[in-house]
Image (tube, rainbow, N blue to C red; front, side, top):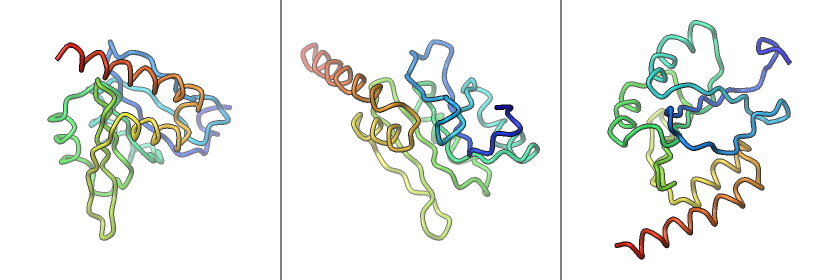
Length: 149
């Protein structure tokens, strides 16, 4: 399927150059079209690229690629007409989700590793098999951190 013929809504995924891989579902049968980009160009794309070429961006995922401060800077500078979710996934797989609420305001939710995986799986961004693999990995990481503290 050519990109211009693809009518699915878009999920922008920002990753850093050293971000570990995740089992994203970028198949043509997935409900969202995934577009990967470097975290440093994300704001520019949202500000200029999306309106210019009329992209239908449903959500933005910052996958272990930015700090909480950079995430807040992004939220503060989002275009006013962008109503999609903005998910920050941190190195420890916890995260924050900014979502539109009634009246056009945004709300911010703190997410546990299980919440992050639930979000990714519910929106079919990763496969269920990937989520089943990643959850024990997250639990192992937490146990190792607890033992070293």
